Image (tube, rainbow, N blue to C red; front, side, top):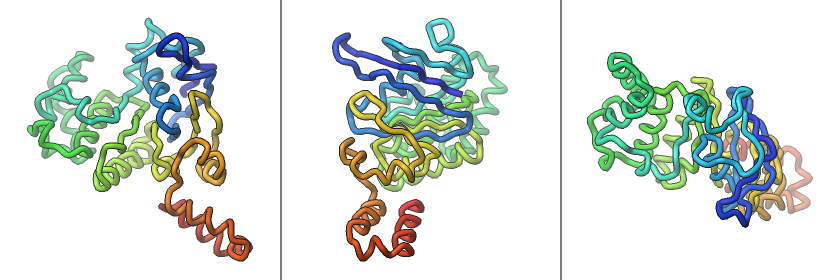
Length: 269
């Protein structure tokens, strides 16, 4: 379990990028943290993996507080996939990129080879082991990054805007993989996103605005709050817009069967 308690952070010691944020993430849960640019959601991701340290508050991972002494051990449990896939590669090909992380944890070569084979197969990248990063698509690069996290046996996977720079095909590939990480491999997943189509697939949504948590709940609860989404500069998915527009027309809104069908259609998109 991840427990975030009264977390605050400032990049310049003047303005707070996060203001007294608290929430929990249960084991094997999929949480989406949503908000527009500048809402503080990516700052949360950096804090959770110890890339930056909180100004105030605390983060506990399985009851252990994240600090300078515990950050290395906690990073064994939490992996992150960043927005720009090109910034994630450190090896000259797929095989050596995944091996880099394993070498840092002093995994023996025989075990390393087996892990690389196992997890590149799981993300459908085994046939690309000798490929150079620049020859891969954005979606393929993200899958390599996820394979590296899985090989390290991370319990928690954070995806920070992992689909924002991908084309529709790449986005579909990564969403499918996220679903598998959550349901098939029982990973705890945290998606940092402004894409409500992705967020609606998660178990729970946290809405951020100007560094503050302004709402939390199940996607179907949050997405019915049109004013909340609009005030947070979040663009409603097409299916949700259709439901919202129909609800404004009295004749349609009174047709319970129609409205229920529109809502079910929205949930399936």
